[in-house]
Amino acid sequence: MKPVLAIVAFCAALACASLPAGAVETCPGDPTAPADTPAIRIDTKGGPALGAMQYPRTAPLAAKQVAFTFDDGPNPDTTPIILDILDRHCVKATFFIIGIYAERHPEIVRDIAARGHTIGTHTWSHPNNLRHLSLASAQREIRRGFEAAEQALAPASEESRLRLLPFFRFPGLNDSPALIGWLGARNIATLSCEFGSDDWRQIGPAEVKRRTMRNIASVGRGILIMHDTKPRTAEALSSLIVSLRQQGYEIVQLEAGDDARELAAAVPDPLLGAIRRAEAPSAPLSAALAPLTNPSLETAESLR
Ligand SMILES: [Zn+2]
Image (cartoon, rainbow, N blue to C red; front, side, top):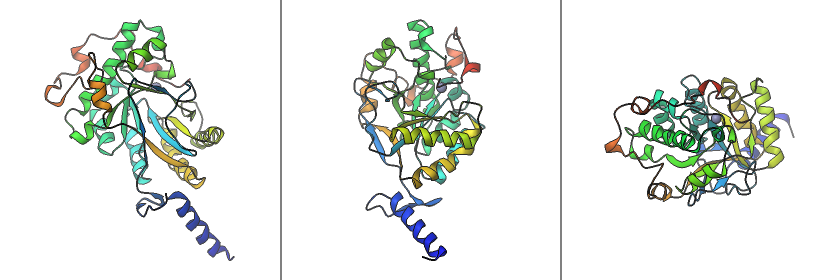
């Protein structure tokens, strides 16, 4: 086969391999990719703890399916760049946001939601290990994280507000049985991961990509943790998406069941659904609530 024909055939094969059977619509910014990110629905009833790095159970992912998650934002310098890259490649992801940043940059939270991504929470101020706090303080960290997310989304459309799902990720993945049980009683799923990206380490974007590809290949399917606060992540992201798809991986979006928010709001002491549009507080949470005893945003480097 002549080189040009070989390239054409190769690209055609890539396009076919990237598209699910029967799909016709392709991504405008990345014609080898599908226009939609398939949804993987998580049953949040009882608040399961999911992710094989820590737990026996995980999300119902098929072989070579990878769910992108981004922690520690929103960040005005990097999150918008990452959102644009995801849009260009028609990838929907999940953002585990920090409450204090959501309060500081609510417009970015609304942008994440408006673009159709999933939003979960990651505490109010990202204490590196909730086990080191009293149970009451840790619970307050988690509660305020959800409240800040709901408040940021309160002025948004109904569709956008529904992008906040009963998903929680522990800072540094440092969980505790007591807190998992407390979340579970409120029908909040704890989401860990199958693999990280090492994007919090002092490495370049090429190395972030290399390690991420290696980590994914070693497990074959799962939830990937990245950080939308890291310029190296933004720099690596486009190439990572393209390479994963070229190797036959399907990028999927974590979603919950249609009744997930109702389930979370129906408990006596809910974490999600406590703030509704009409009654969203007008004052910032940080002004309305007592200061935290252990704010540790400066040590927000997470995931081990
Ligand atoms: Zn984190």
